[in-house]
Length: 443
Image (cartoon, rainbow, N blue to C red; front, top):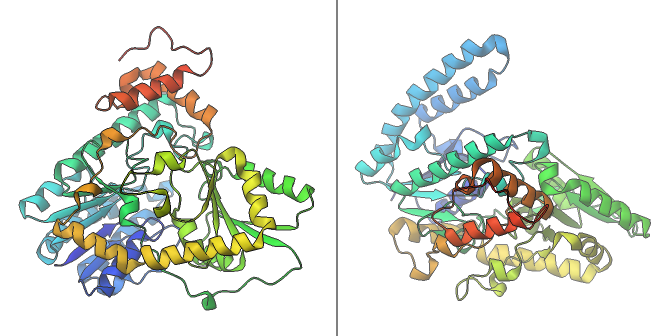
């Protein structure tokens, strides 16, 4: 069995999966065009000459950004598209299973998927959140600094839903987080059951924290500050300092992964984000590899995250998870209680070492590749009731949902296949403002 993994990278996930498959002696190639945060990359060692050429041409095209270079950019992109067709044919003959990420395959509109199915290739899609979560409950999309209009939000909603349905036509297995899979219509494997293939770092490689009396060093590394609730986290740190706590606060944004890892080695704990719909994302998993605990806030309480009989509270990744209103209590707890802080970091590391090592996650993927999927692993999307999304305070979320319904009607939610979930969002919108939807709202 030969595995192709591509064509993008999110938080080092595919790098870890490739590492795990290699440890299991399963031939695989992780092909991608690079990552904005410069994750360590050893995947190119297995590239064919054609793969190297396609990657070089794609990067050259992306580097042409100034207006005088528009024609040159189109030139390189044209060559990239042409060469990808040759790459597709090469991969068809070289690989048996294709693992795609973030809703992307070789070509837009997934023109390659029916070709892969014709040649009886097994197709696995791994979703990470924004690729199957409605934009109107996604703070990364609806951040004020992006300036997205309501009509643009509705158009993007339709596009993402269409993309998910297109993938479902051809994918043999879909892996998705059961709190962000609102657009899935067919049973899928919950992301947390498969796991995040975390490569445990060797702390010796990094600069360790230098003791500065009784100070506690806190790291916050937001990819997007509004989305992660950075302003509130900063204010909370200021409040705690005014109470007499000695805190070193380190904030990194848009920095290379190597720099983030070095700061993880030096900190005492991490404050990840304020409005998350999962427990342990990329930063929290990296922190765990250094035995550093993470605080994650959100509205995804234990009851909502639990999958009865399959994924219970005792199976959750160990982090300090709390409601956004309790962020000050959470940070203060980890500041003053060193014993608890150290124990939480240790438990997070043990979870990584025993549940989410690349080899263990890769073994679960082998079951997916072979079609050996336990019945209880398949999650019916009709069971989804979570509506609070990610990256948005409750008031802002309600305002956006209400506005989308008023502008585009209930159909703009693109949830007609899930009437109960659709009804829950309508009820959410009706509880804002004057407490009722406008009369002109229609399906």
